[in-house]
Each structure stands twice: as C-alpha cells, then as structure tokens.
Length: 150
Image 1: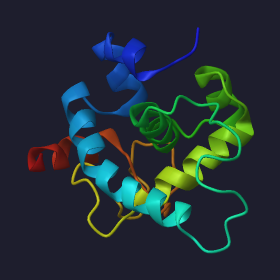
Image 2: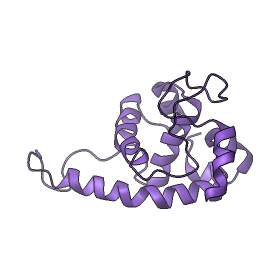
Image 3: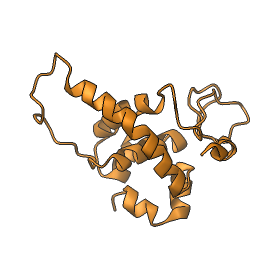
Image 4: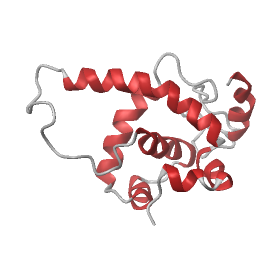
C-alpha cells in the first residue's frame, strides 16, 4: 500500500495522527503554500544555467500532485521519520524524498508561514519529536493553540 493524500483523507483519525492537522486545516495550508511553491518552481525553471529545456529530464517518481508532496513534508516535520521510511510509505526512493523536502521546505518557511505551524524553537516541554531548540516545531499542543488563526 502506498500512502497518498486521497487514502489518508478518507481516514480523518489517521490523517490527524500522521500530520497533526484536520483535513480542512491541511487544505488551508495547501492553499497558502502553493502560490509560494509555484513562484519558486517557475524561478527554478527559468534559471540561466539550466542543462535541459523546459519539459526535459526525469519525470517525478512521487505523485506530481502537490498535496502528496506537501503531505510528505508535513509528515516528516511532525513525526521526523527517516527518509527511507518515508520513501517506503510513499512508494519512492529516499533520494526522491530528499528532493521533495528540499523543494517544499523553503516554501513552508517563507516569511508568511501558515499560522498553525510554529516556527519558534522547540522547548524542553514540547510534545513533538524534534529535539529541544529545533528550528521548526510541530507540537500538537502548539498547533491546536495556533489553529484559531485559521
């Protein structure tokens, strides 16, 4: 079984356990991240040192649907599994997981991040799996506290 947005969306309890978000909150996050991601993607396509013309090169192994790529990133931020584990869950290699994280994370840490994500350093009392002082905290307690901003 390969994990993807449609399968996880059908099970709201599992979706919340994996991401820390309700489906509606994730869709809001997706709507806010995609404009930033599209600009970033367009800049990468139009850079002067490209080796191939637009459309050339390899096809993405992870679903080209943006929600699957953001889902992978949010699960990584929330649970902090290894890239090999994420690759197994999503049916891609660990290298493709790394490429996805490198593409999506800069958009998630854009100067206007989603209000439900906490970008303050983790505290020792934090419930997320990040070590104290980590730069991105997705503690369920903080997510719930900030969810009123949605």
